[in-house]
Image (cartoon, rainbow, N blue to C red; front, top):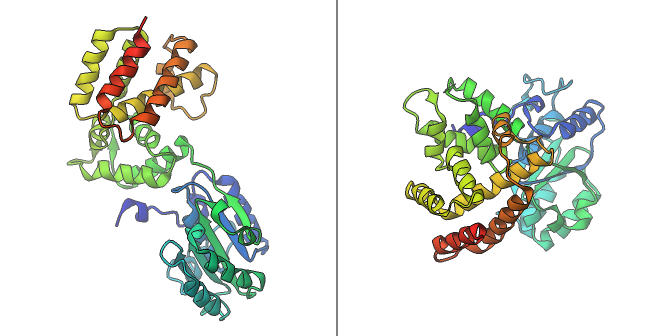
Length: 349
């Protein structure tokens, strides 16, 4: 079993980064104030489908207090009254007509029959219109939960009949905490506290990507000890030492030495696109710290950044060039030439 499935939250208390939404859902379920249809919207990997499954189980849980009891049939994932529909592949009007027909039937052995429609924005226009009648006159024992990354693509009349919850991107600290739990349960020894921060920072603020990256790293281990070098090698990351070195040489106009070090990094298997992106990310972090915004920056980087004495003018100039270059370099036939041009332009006197 993959780590993603093994450590998918089984209870609301295990959900990370969505505290306000979890609290609102738990309170409404405790009070029995249920809506006919829910909408969970947000970036991929933030927990939309996980929350939908938890809600589907919770409203049928026979002993729900502040969380699922974990003992009744409804608390398990093997519930015939929870039906999942992938709108990416089952998006046509015939699929929805069948759903509408079955939704009027009483549940097998639960209080409510719950339909989870994933990737809801991919329903066809005809299918969406066919769904309206069901939402307008729902069975008292049927609930619908829509999950989508693009709610604006859904029919407005469907959205208006749902209780919406917009999931936020997950903070690095929350991702790091979840990874820490997984590593501990897997019996993995970490050689450096920075390891999980490094994985979190490359996860696009999603737990899904973070856990997948961790699994890649663990899959290549020959012992139960994970080092910073292991993850940089497994994920082909540019080391912080190399990035700070390149940045320092850039900011101090050390042209010859900069290109010498840049070639070493490229020769180690790093792409120019990745070097540019990592440099951009690092410059942004430095500017955030200089402006007092340190909430989402780990303590190790914070200590390192506070030692730097680069001017804001130079940092903004470099950031602007890196952003422009990032837009152009994708699909560029020779990223080396474009990269070298931009670096030379920045270091010109």
